[in-house]
Amino acid sequence: MAHPLIPQILDLAAPVAESIGLEVVGAVFHTNQRPPVLRVDVRNLTQDTGLSDCERMSHALESTLDAAGIIPDAYVLEVSSPGISRELATDREFVSFKGFPVIVTLAEPYTGQQEWIGQLIGRDEAAIHLSQKGRMITLPRELVAKVQLDDRRP
Image: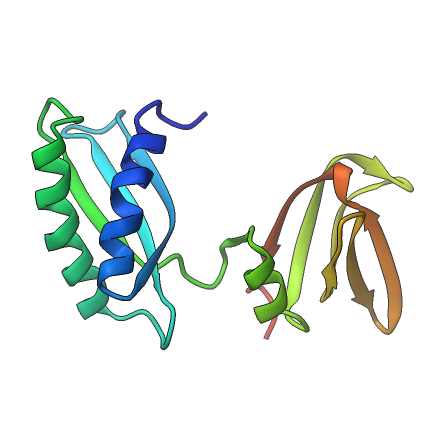
C-alpha cells in the first residue's frame, strides 16, 4: 500500500522534474527505515537517465519539499532512474518497449496460467498482446495486475 503522502509528493515533484527536462515515473516512501527514505524515480525524456539528472532533481526537489513542509520529520531523499526491470504503465512505455521480453502477471489465472512471458506486441483498450515463439497471445486487460520488463534473459 502506498504511503498517503505519495500523491502530494508526486504533485510537487512532477513540475520540478518537467522544469529540468525529466519525468517522474514513481515514488515510494519507506517509513520502516530510520530515518525514513523517500525514493523518487525519474527518467530523462531525451537520453539515458544519468547521475547528473538524478543530482539535479534531488537538489531541486529537496528545496520544494522543504518549502511545502508536508514531511514533518527528518528523511532521506533518494532520486534514481527506474532501471530496466521496472513495471510498464504508460501508453508511451508500451510503445517504446514493443518487441522487448516482458512478464505479465494476472490477478487471476487465464486459461490455467497466472504469469505469462513473451515479447511485447502492444496493448489496446481490451488486451495486452504478446508473442510466444511466434504465437500471438491475447490477455484480457481487466485481468492484468502488472506488466514488467523481463531482464532475466540475454
